[in-house]
Image (cartoon, rainbow, N blue to C red; front, side):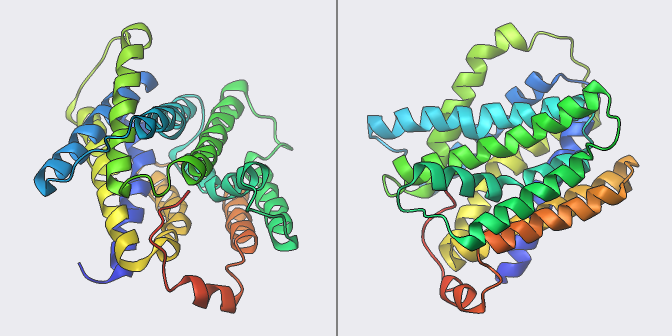
Length: 305
């Protein structure tokens, strides 16, 4: 598959399907059990790919220490946030929309903790616009039950965790090892971390009809393992800026699948809020500037974060 836009479309489909698979997997497993299966299968998939390519894992102990932190903030906690959120009132489509707030959170934490990241009028306006869109999706004027509100906030918090993870990577891990090696180390650490917790938090009964275990398999091997490989190959070929446009397609896939496959309802404020969130991201990242787009479209070897 040579066309970068076709590959971006496939990657958006893989990640957009993740929220559907979580919802289906919840029919037979708890949120913690889903995350355990997802991370372990993802780690196995990416380590197998590393073995096929005969690429070594990082050897620096400092890299592994940072990878352990990343395993928590980029995998264990946000994966639990989305799974628990969908188990407590958030639809798969809403989870996809809240996932799209990740670039906004990344900008917030970057401006707070990265000295090189400065405030600008475009960023401030974009952040205000984006988070206003989030409020539209939350619909505070409606009376939400506790489960619905807590589930949506959990998904929003998961997006914030990704923002923290990207900034942490930028500050402590960028350039220390090959991106695929970093991803493998991160998932390996995450698998160990969730494995240690599992005997205490993943003890509920399990029902594994085909649709449940196939969903977990897809979440882990495809959405967490293969997608990492696919993404870093895309970054290598077309640059991080072009590859990051997948962010704008994931919520579209998630919402469409939620409505078509699960019969989820799409409220007017979900659609309007998602559009406002994406508009805020475009403004904050200055992607509406033709000059900036032309310069950045030449590509970068740096992965997001």
